[in-house]
Length: 467
Image (cartoon, rainbow, N blue to C red):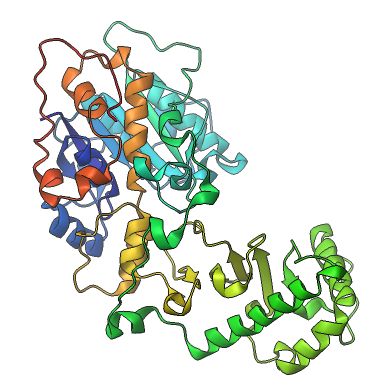
């Protein structure tokens, strides 16, 4: 076996898929969501344990030995009082429970995932505590945020047409006798997996791919309601009218707010209206005046959108030179209807704002659960069984992207080759795995047994990436 790992905050097993495809053996998983536990166990053959706080605390670290620790941990605020060490400041948070495992078991590699906002100004203190805690425990880790999105990774390296920027914390334990350098070690480099790829070249219909022959029952789950079709049809006509009236200006690059157009008496703006809103209102009024001749008949035809919910009277065109609205990917958002080119989709989220695919008559619907799973890199044999689709979408929205984790683990081995020479089986297993995790994941037997990467070499190989 190449290496052993534990999967914390495991969800339905995105980390499991990536690390098992790299030749790892999962020796423990932890997850508190009962529905996710069922899906994890049914697909991976391992039942996750429960609350991590019961597995690692002041009194116990009930975790098996392992080489790699991974987890997409929730981030609660840390205390800012005093000048305590990172480990103490993290007390009372779930990261503190992770730190207890790290302190007790000393895994060789740590890979943690979180939303990009963790590195923002509001969480600066939390970020500093995490990095300081890892360094105090003997790990080489960059204080710079490592931001990765699957849409920037080549399709032949496991990339996916989804903008999903996440911050990854990649730490490698230094061998005995080495001291943590005060110089930042730099970030892992995904150049080999991203070079030469233009994210604008994604085509959902082909790269995902979209499902073509849905049964009637499957189609019923994802088809649009008559109201939803009516909203899109109205805005599709709007797009056609503005494109034909291009001599008066192109499609607006700002959000269109019909309620701000001066086709009727507009009440005076409140004195406390923020500058950004003044800007949008000014642009909307100017836009309406420029296109009044075509917009007035459109408004009248659709009863001034009076029967539309407030959020459907707003529209945002982010589709550049797309020919029409039905050829786009759409999102029904609280801030309005957003249209993007049918290349890559916005991030899956753990709520019901599922992307709507136009493209042609057969694709005027939401993404299916299977398509959402493909966006995260899950193989087609991965089964959600008979649970409600809403639960599956939520689980996928909470999952890590498999290709991102797979390539990041490879990049850690490239950056930290010298520090990993004392763990040759781990180093060989990850570095000699195929470039594309899909090649492994297509067969469920590979990732459940994970013995196909046992490598016997007389000498340590120079790290290389297999083509």
